[in-house]
Amino acid sequence: MNLMIKDQIKIYLQKYVKDGQIEISVPENEKFGHYSTNTAMRLAKTRRENPMKIAKDIADFLMKNSNGYFSKIDVASPGFVNFWISEKILQKELAKIIAEKSKYGKPNKKTLRQAQGLKKIQIEFISANPTGLLTIGNGRGGFLGDTLGNLLKFYGHKVEKEYYVNDAKASAQIKELGKTVVGEGTSYLTEYLEEKISAKKSALRSLKKKIKNKEKLYAEAGALIAKEIQNENKKFIKKKLKIKFNNWFSEENLYKKKLVDKLLKTLKDKNLVYKKEGAIWFKTSEFGDPEDRVLIRQTGEPTYFLPDLVYHLDKFKNRKFDDVVDIWGADHHGYGPRLRAGLQALDVKKDRLHIMIVQLVRLVKGGEEFKMSKRKGVFVALEDLIDEVGIDVARFFFLMSNPETHMDFDMDLAKEKSLKNPVYYIQYAAVRCAGIFKKIGKLPKPDYSFLSAESDIALIKILARYPEIIEEAAKNYNPQILIRYSMNLAKKFHNFYENERILGEKKEIASARLTLVKASLVIFKSVFSILGIDIPKKM
Image 1 (cartoon, rainbow, N blue to C red):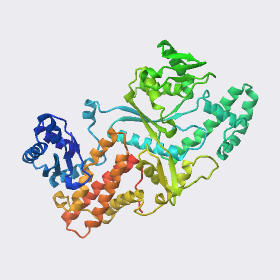
Image 2 (image 1 turned 60 degrees about the vertical axis):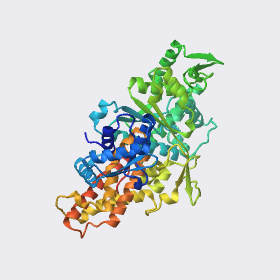
Image 3 (image 1 turned 135 degrees about the horizontal axis):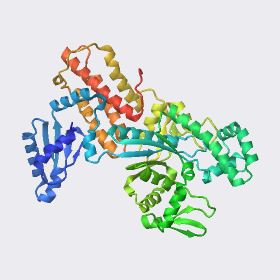
Image 4 (image 1 turned 45 degrees about the horizontal axis):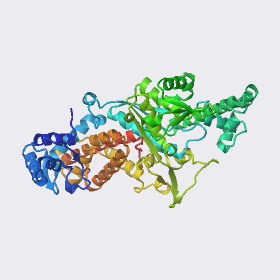
């Protein structure tokens, strides 16, 4: 198995450290090394020795017993050991990138499987209420889910992306939509909704004639318009957002297949529900939830909790996912404990469900909040934003911010066609990479020892960190780590491009540097593919 540099350092450390856990970190400032460890301080607690003495012993031992892997090892108070990787090792890593190409950064599947590190993971995201256009909030969660899926798949997991269609006729939201559609509701009638009603005018007239029961009419009329809206959203997601779902799961099927009724019976058999004030309650407080929750209202209508619980049980017990990731909007904050409690009551461990809350987005222009919508409505349509700034910019900007914090989307910066715009900055680096090959013909086989300039080594070093970045991002379910890496990679490449020559250099140096550019393009393509961003042909 090809080891990451970080793992090789651990192996060398293990020759000296027989007790204690080894942690390797990457210092923000390179004056503290390419890598660093606090192992000496950990050992000092158990051995009752001076951490600086232990750190010095580690440094001396590794310099003598690492076969030239390190160019330098020093110690820093209160007991850090700092490592500098030798140029020879970095150059070998460059050769590995050239040899492995698009597979570079992917872990060894066999080893991960043996360590039970590979999983079948489902990511459910967007899942917007089918009552209108997708909003910019839906976009933030959508790009996060899509990128996370790409990342986990690249890492080696079996990943399925799913959209949960909230189309149950029994649900309050579909009935409320139906009321509005037949002119008896109180919901705000948007211009967009009026368009959909107009398009289905004939079908709605037919429903009114056929169905005399008001509740059933609301359900059928709401479902009819919701399906129309959902079909349009589906096309938009595929064509404009470039997001491909493996599955579009219909909530209505949970009722058609009697799965909701089956769960209610199971809960009754297990004595996990009770009646109070005409409603049916689930004893979720016995499983970590702050209070018990209503499953069936006094009216006989199910709450959102009941089908959600059925849906998640289907994921874990019928479809056998090891882990499930739910990406929810800010309005679902606080909903997680009841769902986890319900699952635990039905023998599904809480830690198998990962919930990510995506906070609200505010469009900002000229330092002030900016209202942008081409259609009348309460929310800003995602389609309007994409038309304004482009899909690549929208994706990258949403991914830059921690999803669990409120976000200001800077419209001025998003439309900037200069290196100030982070998307332009990273794409320009990749375009520069690709452009170099058009100017240079065939060169001799590279001798990597000619890559010794400061900018050469800095670029190789960040390329060599790619497998570690992938592992860290995948294990933490955090694509933001990859966003930061792409910015840093672009910075190192721009610096290399501006400081080191290829054209006009000796053939040996030119060949080595051209290979370094080739390796950079391999990594740019890999990162961009995961992030779902294109490399333009020219800029």
